[in-house]
Each structure stands twice: as C-alpha cells, then as structure tokens.
Image 1 (cartoon, one colour):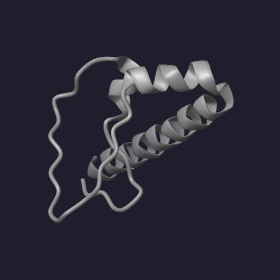
Image 2 (tube, rainbow, N blue to C red):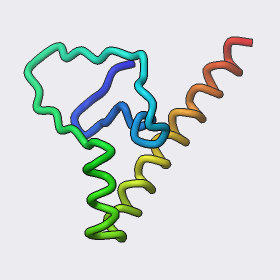
Image 3 (tube, rainbow, N blue to C red):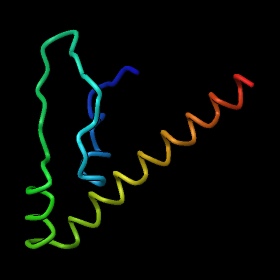
Length: 77
C-alpha cells in the first residue's frame, strides 16, 4: 500500500489499543506526526467536538479501506 501527503496509518492501534505487526517506510524525506492514545484521550477531555471529528475521520477511512479490500477480494474470486 502506498500513502500520499495527508494520508494516515496506524489508526487501528488507537481504536484497538493493541500493537500492530506492520512496518512503514518512507521513500523520501517526510514529516510525520504521531497521535497517541494519551493524545486522543487528552483531546476528548479538552474538546469533545474535536475528538468526535477525529474519530469520524478515522472511521470514514477504515470504512473506505474495508470497502476497497472487499472489492479486491470480490475481484479475485
């Protein structure tokens, strides 16, 4: 899978609170930002509306990826 500017990854770790067995690698210089469980909880405590927006966007991305995986599986059968 290849990501582009503005994409994110590792969001399932925030929701499941389980480490994931994946590795990410950049092909050129990049600036990456980390959102930890502690950061997400702090956002919840300080600004619940912003917290909900973050979760909505994570959920949208997960649904998009799930739909894409389903399409690939259906195309392979």
